Length: 435
Image 1 (cartoon, rainbow, N blue to C red):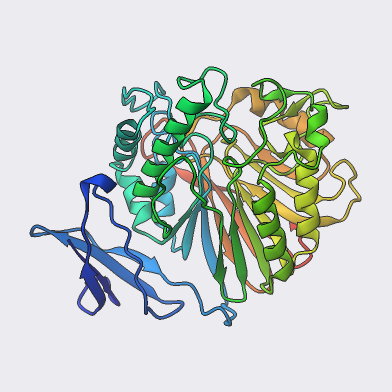
Image 2: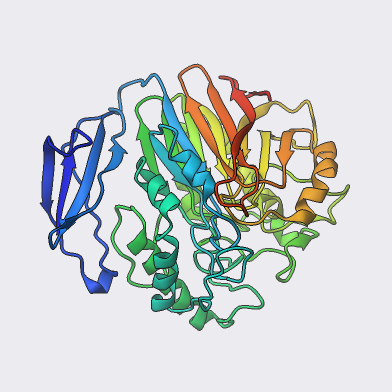
């Protein structure tokens, strides 16, 4: 097949081109890393094969590392279970000019049987199963339009493999309950993820794949892309998501990122010289206090790993630029500051966290019902919404950060209206203002 990159949407001024082989062993995927393009420039690209050509898609290169761009436009997305809602949020996203889309995980789901578009596919446990799941998801026209709008930066969460897995430990009800069978499944899932995502690294050859990495957008922002699944300690609670923290959660080796990724993140934050330090993070970092004391925590989130979170907060406090954490996973919207003492309303903010809603995955009515309690007992959280799907549009400048929550009226109705629900700004000191 032939690939082409052009300086115009009509593909008349081709600036780079070449050939690539789409092999069956890679699910006929190609990963073309085009070099020699100008920084901070919009381009269009397409593929040709056997007399047919794809429609031109838009991409944009990052600014020169030493330049200070006037702005950076980011689309924040996550959690797109296809049988639980239409991709109306992606149709809306495709109408907004963006420089990059950041996907925070749960691109596919291993489960099925949702409220709309029930695909009837069996739960994947091998490579063919995961490939079929990606092929089904990527047929959606709204998802295709979002991919064609801007370059994507992707990471994974749990459902790319299995719900709430931790490192090499499957969930208690897993179809692959022992470690060896689960690692074979993880190898298949990671391979299929690599095949179907726009990433630069080499294909995995087993159950391990390093995906945490750092991207720079001039002197405006460093984007630290995290992996909070592959290296984490098995959570407290014997498979339960909600309950008391165990003693191990306070130990220095109880981790979300793993020791190597923690060191990498700490070094990158401390050495950063950009205006903003952005974390592409999967699980909620701010504190959700459901009740006084230690008896009720969401153990799958950073709340279940307090010592690990404290170490990351130390790194954020020493970051060269203002930290902003972008988070997915929980199918709901949360906005708050991060602080060394999350129970003290006077504790100085060290950054902000913006938790985005799911694109289509169903919100939890149980979680939505707890929002008033959590807001009352969690002084650093400013706003939350627990019932609507959507996405978040960010505009970064050297002076401030603007985040707009765009929510779908009803994701179960195809073409439902999408509205701006709330807008927040983050100042140079990391403090939130709004809505």
